[in-house]
Image (cartoon, rainbow, N blue to C red):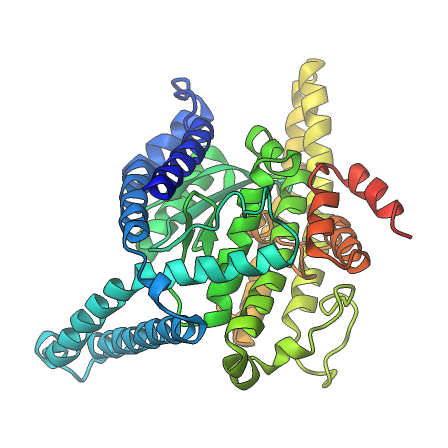
Length: 458
C-alpha cells in the first residue's frame, strides 16, 4: 500500500510539472498564433483526456503487477508474444487495406469480413497484453539504467514510464527564408493525409510559413507516448529515448527547451543526446534480456559504427554508385541553406529599409528574397522526386522538414553542416560511461558551452 501511494505521489507530481509547461496564455485576437489556432483547432490532440486515461491505466497495472510473478525468461517471452500478436495485427491490417484497394473486388466489405474478424480478435489480444508488456519493458530499461550509474538514492528518477499508444501528428512550422522550428501543434492521431495536406497549405497561404504534418515515434509526455510497433529494438530504443528527455527535463538542457523557441542550439543538443543515449540503452537492454533475439535478428548491434563515423557526408558506400540517403540528404540541406541564406539576408535588409522609410527599396529587396525562396523550394521538390525514385517516399520536403528532422543530429543528413551533431557525437565518443556523458551535457544549452565541455576531454 505504501509503495502504491508513493507511486501515485510521484506520478501526480511529475504530471503537475508537465501540465505547467503545457498550459499557456490564450493567443491575442488576430495574432499569428490566433490564426494558426483557427486552422488547427478542430484537429488538436486532447492531451488532458489522454493523461487521465494513461495514469488510470498505469495505476491499475501497478496495483496488480503480473510481471512480479515472472522470472526474466518468462518476462522476455511475454514481451515477444505481445510483439508477435502486434506483428500479426499489422499484417491483417495490410491485407484488409489491399482488399479495399483492389479494383477487381466489387464488394470489399464482404470480402474482408473474415480478416476483419481476425483483426478485432488480435486487437483485443494486443490490448490485453499491452500494459504488462509495457511494465516489463520499463523495468528492463530501468535495470540497465541502474547498471549505468544513473540511480538517485538507489532508484531511477524519474521512473521509466511509457505507454504504447496512437501518437499525435506533429505540425512543424518554419519561416520560408530560413530553417528554424517554430511553435506548431499536436494534432489528432487519426488525422488523414488529405487533411494534413490542407493544414499545410493553409499555413502557407495564411501565415506564409513552411509547414509539415509528420508522424513521430515517441513523445516525452509523462508517461511517454510510444508508437505501436512489432520491432523489439525500436520499442526499447524509443522508450529509452523518451526517458532521457524526462531525465533532462529536470536539468538545464531540458528546462531551457520549455522557455526557448523550438529551434536553436538547445533543441538540437537535447534531441541528439536523447537519440544517442536512447539507442545505446535500447541496445544494451536487448543484449541483456533478449540475447538470442539480438544474435538472430539484430546481429549489427554487436558491431556498431563509431560515433564519429560520418556515413552521410563523408563515408562512401561499398558500391560508389549506390544511392546513400544520408549523404544525399546532407548535400540537399547544405544547398538549401545556401539559397535561404541569400533570402534571409535580403529580407533583413528589407526590414532595415522599411524602418528607414525607403518603401520602394524594401519592396524590391523582398521580391529578390522571394525569388531565392522559390528557387530553394523548387530545388527541394526536385530533390524529393530523386529520393522517391530511389525508394524513399518523402511526402513533403521543405523548410519545415529540415527544421524537424535536422534537430535529430545523431547521424549526418538533414542537419546539414550544423556543427552541433558532430560535437555531441565527438563528446559521447570521449566519455565511456553513459552517466558521465549525461552529467557532462546536462548543463549545456548552447554550442559555445558544448565546445567548452568538449575542450575538457582532449
